[in-house]
Image 1: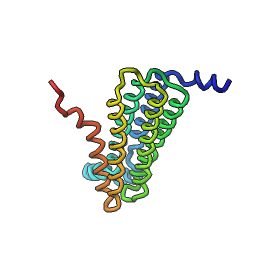
Image 2 (image 1 turned 45 degrees about the vertical axis):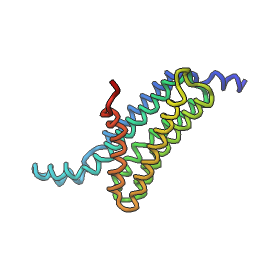
Image 3 (image 1 turned 180 degrees about the vertical axis):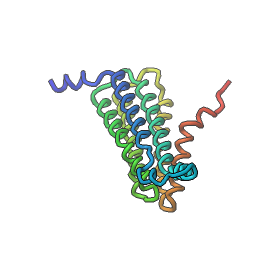
Length: 210
């Protein structure tokens, strides 16, 4: 009976996509809700000049927020690309993607930690570990789907290699960027942000064949 249940469980890609959309939406919303001026800082504002000073000091809050919004956008897109290539899901694929979504739910916490301790390496390492978890789950999901014969017939071997290579290259760049914190956390964050901008924006500027 267990074998029969495993064979019929977790078949719907559509339900998995719907759950994913909801969790990503909540995670993105929690990020912006966490953007706020601390009460003790509010008490120090007595003029427009004071307010401009406070707004300028909020960059430590805004930078991690923008980075994480880009991270969530990139990984949401990456997961959707994978799910769209599946004929159907199965129990194993479903649990892998639930693990992926678990990592998504942790991102608001690791973002808050980075915002609070942006100069400290452990905060950046926790943030990177969260991104690494996302990449590992996504790579495992694709490999599992390919090994189980769940990919649609039109997915070529080259397309599969492109998806895998994109994940591996991105994770290598994130790891290199995090390693830069040995020299300076600001340099590390700037590099990671540049990688995210490349994956989010740069492909749109590449020349399309006529």
